Image (cartoon, rainbow, N blue to C red; front, side, top):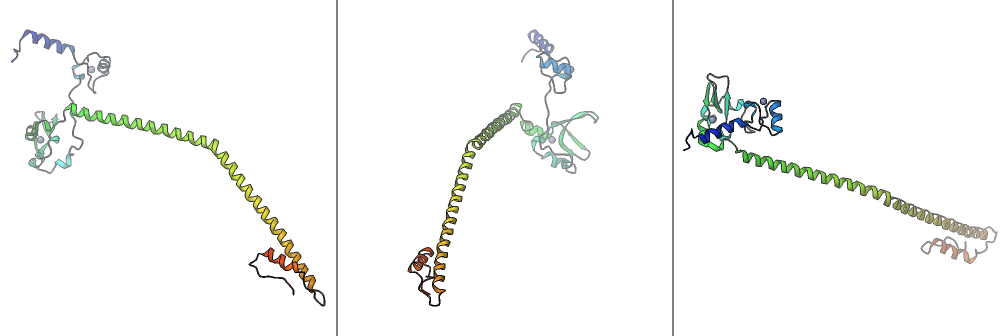
Length: 241
Ligand SMILES: [Zn+2]
Ligand SMILES: [Zn+2]
């Protein structure tokens, strides 16, 4: 056991207290926050960073506790048995946040907190690990977002390039095909007109042959030409009447 009045420790203890904290509490005044940012000690003891007491994220709200017996509330998970300072009660005291019933409160540490010990609070280094993991995940997602943005920009560039270089070619090709089709249609129409003219000539020859009192046979070529012009499958329409 160290001798409390050991001059070595008395001196070091005085030095430690005189130095003051270089960490400002979130509730610190502007002067002390400025000091801490510049690496200097805070001016007021009350502005030095204190331990932080947070409730579990799913801490039971009032209605979940009210109407239940002290025994029932004492069985709630250890993480809810944290201290709250009662500054209205006489005397002021630290109470358990959940060990209560109508008209009854329990000082902290309550039986459950004492029994469960370290299960009540999360050690800071574990909380920091979780925070670091979250920060890493955020950084990862930000990087992914940047990557996707770059990908999108590059895809847009590709599209612009394609529009500028490929589409005119495609349009030209389409025009070419359209013109080809038009040429074929014109040729088909010309062929049809000529065929009609040939068939008209055949009809005329047939009519000429029968208009006399004593019809003469139509020329032999008329039937042959009609057969060719209408295709072999078609029945002969002409011939000698
Ligand atoms: Zn201050
Ligand atoms: Zn309790």
